[in-house]
Each structure stands twice: as structure tokens, then as C-alpha cells.
Length: 144
Image 1: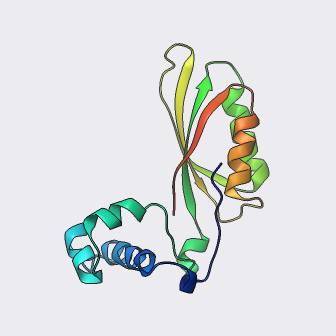
Image 2: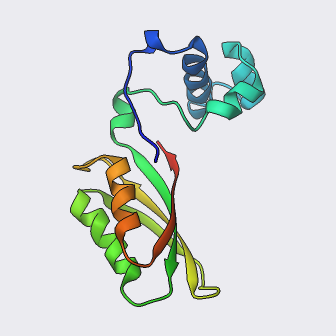
Image 3: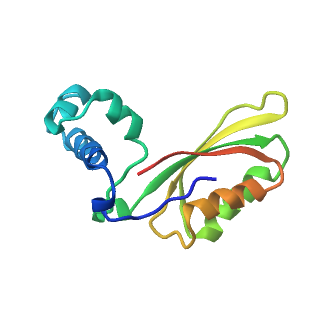
């Protein structure tokens, strides 16, 4: 089970701050590509790719977060409905749902969620998904 912490940056390697800075340069369009971003902040491309989806800043922009979660669901009536009920009960909002056709009675589902008003942790939401009968392979793909 993944667990998330908020810690003072003084406790973390300088690399993490540089990864965040590189990502911000890219998002703001101040550099054209990843190579320019990592060169500007003084890290390797390998370091950027290793940590880019794992470290985040807690500035105001990230408080209105979004998450992408993938699940495998049994092809039975009501399974997706129960997953969506967990989202609603958590205070989060559905942004998109992509469901593939079932193969061998299992359907791949990817849900993007607005976490702005969530009342539980993302870890708790993932655990709630896992408790729904008919779900498996619940994964947090990314969080912003």
C-alpha cells in the first residue's frame, strides 16, 4: 500500500526540488523539452524520469488536485456503479471514465477524479475501491 507524506523540503535530497522545478519549467512553457528543463535545473534526464511522478509541491495550484486511477472490474452489473459510489461518498468528483470492452469477463477502467473536495485520503479511497466486490488491480496512475 502506498502512503503519502508532507515533509519540509529541508529533510529531502535537493534532487526532489530540482525535479519539481524542471516540471514547472515544462508546464509553464519556459523550456521546449525535458532536455532543456533538466539542463536548466542541473539534473540528469534519468533522475527526472525516476522521480517526476513521485514528488510534488504543495503550492496553491496543487491543492486543487486531480488523480488518475486504473482498475480491473468484473463484467457484472453494478460493479462500476459501486466504485463510482465510493468516489461520491469521498467528496471527490468524476472528471472522466474510460472503460474498455470486457475480455474474459474483466474490463479495464480508468477514472480521472477531481480531489478538490475529497474528505478522505487518496489511500483510503483506493482501499475503498479494493473492497468493492468485483474490483482488482487498483492502481494510482498519477496525481497532480
